[in-house]
Length: 253
Ligand SMILES: NC(=O)c1ccc[n+]([C@@H]2O[C@H](COP(=O)([O-])OP(=O)(O)OC[C@H]3O[C@@H](n4cnc5c(N)ncnc54)[C@H](O)[C@@H]3O)[C@@H](O)[C@H]2O)c1
Image (cartoon, rainbow, N blue to C red; front, side, top):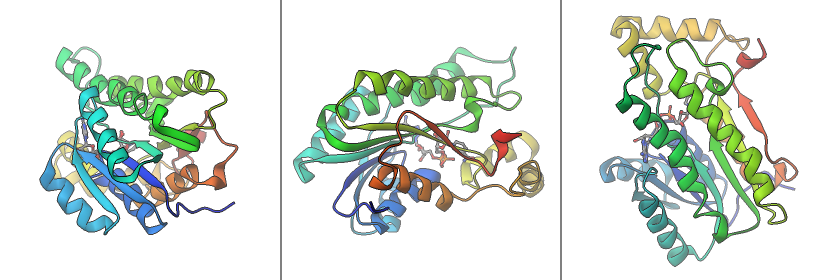
């Protein structure tokens, strides 16, 4: 059984940047046709240029079921099949208890929880045995940092979604897994550090996060791409219903 996606068709939400873009690129490099979705066409066009000729970008908001149904209609019209869905689009706001607003809660849960549900639900009936669903979680599902309770709660919710979904879909041959990264060097991580501690503290913040990790560093988007490739491919054929941490050992301590 090979760690390849030759001839497969995959959808990656939030694929215009960061982890989603790296996953999409890893998938096309390993033989898949990849449809990325995101909020702005301009960013999708830039990302498709990075992914290569087997990439397509479609504007769709994951928290709108109609948008996701339209994506799958286009995928089926063009490719006639769907093998893998990566529910990656997500965000996180800093907000200690006492400061959390309704707006923050709605934004986080509408993207990270409602968005995952309505990325996955319309996809499942289109998939055949061997199909794979990968939800990008976070170590925040078990160990949310201070001030990140809404984010941690949202990532714990999707981890629990799949515990039930593997039972709902028993016998279909479709696998559901959560891939939970630790700190990964992305623009969004660096922006969050800048917002919290100031621009001149970003490098120090990255170093300190690395120092707190058994691996001695934070991760790269390519490392997450490789784990997603494994979970999408036949190489992981007996793995379903789990949360895999790609976190340099962070959740072990
Ligand atoms: N970077 C990290 O350290 C880290 C760690 C753990 C988990 N994660 C998770 O990885 C995923 C990707 O994060 P990233 O760091 O690459 O961030 P990112 O901001 O670079 O990428 C997220 C993408 O999702 C898109 N997006 C946001 N809301 C959307 C919506 N409603 N519909 C469609 N697209 C939407 C954004 O425009 C963006 O392109 C997220 O689920 C995040 O929670 C990231």
